[in-house]
Image (cartoon, rainbow, N blue to C red):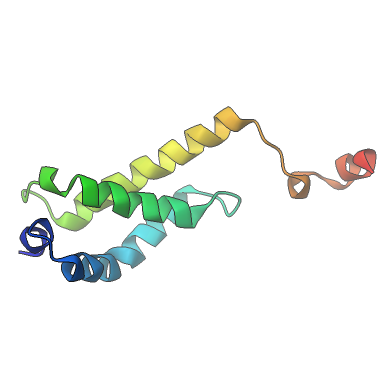
Length: 102
């Protein structure tokens, strides 16, 4: 019912879905990504992907399960992207490394 309303253009229904499922998505994201990652961006990407692909949702499983799979994929994508960056933050350095740079 909620999905049908969202697909019909009811933005308030999508907001209610986000409010209802946010604890689940936040828990998944925080369990997969460290604080060094942009968790909020991953949460937003999860809902963006869900909104864009809502027409692909089949009601053979709860919506929360479908959304959880999207959240896990977003986390994995973020982790893969982080490996490609090869970026090291100053705050990630130990005392010896920090002293060597100063």
